[in-house]
Amino acid sequence: MTAKLEDLPRVPRGKPLIGKDRERFRESVSVVYNSDPDVSIRDISEWTGRSFGFIRTMLIEAGVELRPRGGSTHCDKALET
Image (cartoon, one colour):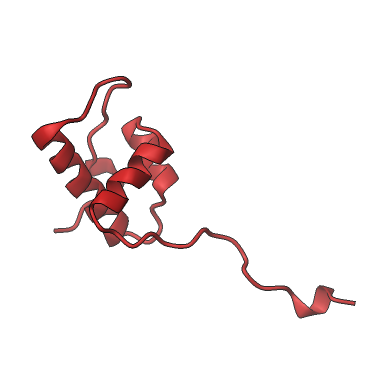
């Protein structure tokens, strides 16, 4: 199953996600996050209208291994003096 960010449902603020709705949301979020390495938790959060923390919790509950934060992780040797 492949999904795109645009396939995720937008959930109104304050609407609780419980039961089957929560399970379906968690599954769809985890599929999108796993299938596209360019999609971040923040992207999913902005698209769905849910908080960063909520999306992160959904991914953890789904057993998804979270990717490391972006950006450079090494020093540029040319800049060292």
